[in-house]
View 1 (tube, helix red, strand yellow):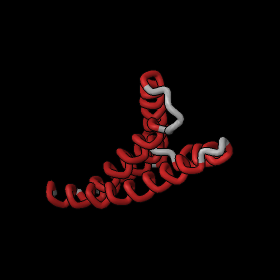
View 2 (cartoon, helix red, strand yellow):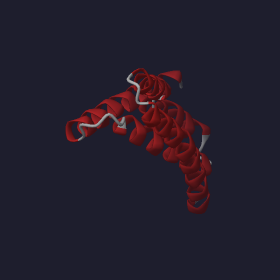
View 3 (tube, helix red, strand yellow):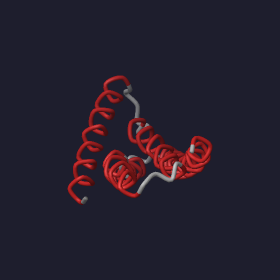
View 4 (tube, one colour):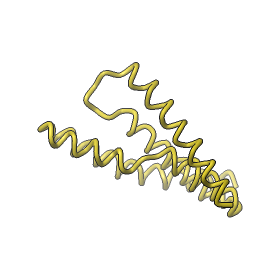
Length: 118
């Protein structure tokens, strides 16, 4: 099982790289759009997976593996620190608040949708 989780994480990391690269080509802003969209979509999808009450194996591979590799808490926090270091504290606060609050809200929405679909 651990190998499937690892393969899922590798796939999620590759997806994150591809999404980040595509978004950065189209967006030249100080706002960390790619990481925000990745983390928010990952929060929603993980919530939906939880709400679907999938079998443990699927949750481990998709939730822990793929979505765990796709989302990135560490990158988000270093981007927040980068904004603070660049003296763009308002952006840092907005980014942190949006990431955490909207991420939690999307997780709840995903759980609700997963329960409806189930």
